[in-house]
Length: 77
Image 1 (cartoon, rainbow, N blue to C red):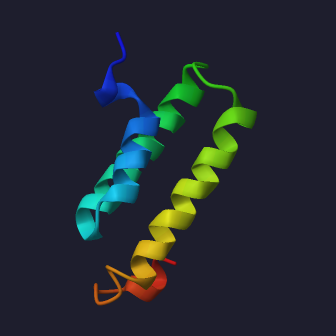
Image 2: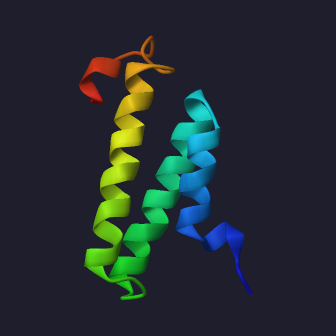
């Protein structure tokens, strides 16, 4: 009943534990699930907004650290 694969918070926490591309993929999956939840009115915007901001900041931080040598990393921030 918990559906960890469909729980955006699980993906966001996992992204904090990972490095590099794995972390980026987890953050992107979490963000996607949050946005999908907003579209079907599963989540409230005021609840999701801080989570989205935190996820996007974490994604930008990845490009400043683990993914700094990627092509066009400076454009992703």
